[in-house]
Amino acid sequence: MEALGRIERVDLRTIWTSEDKHFTPWLAQPDNLQILGDALGIDLELEAQEKYVGPFRADLLCKNTAEKDSWVLIENQIEKTDHRHLGQLITYASGLRAATVVWISAEFCDEHPPHSIG
Picture: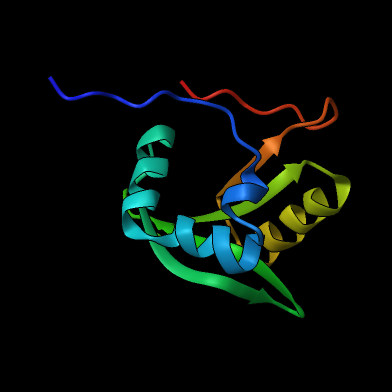
């Protein structure tokens, strides 16, 4: 039998030092988007990485391939959630006409409770 590794909590900054230069490109890889899509129950197809919305850039814009003209905005944050990122989510979702918003974060503060998957 093959030995399995142990799941352990790590500081995300030790793996990805920068959200836009390291984590976003990693997440945009087809295999990683597939895993995220499976967890969310959404068929994701990458449309754009660092998609401009006016002078701002949304991390990932994906198509939900199961629904016509259905866009999925993915904003990642490898720190604790904050109001700045919440404002970005609202701006990007509006500007990109996203039907679904996914906020990935290392930790959600009490004011931004995550919606559980399942």
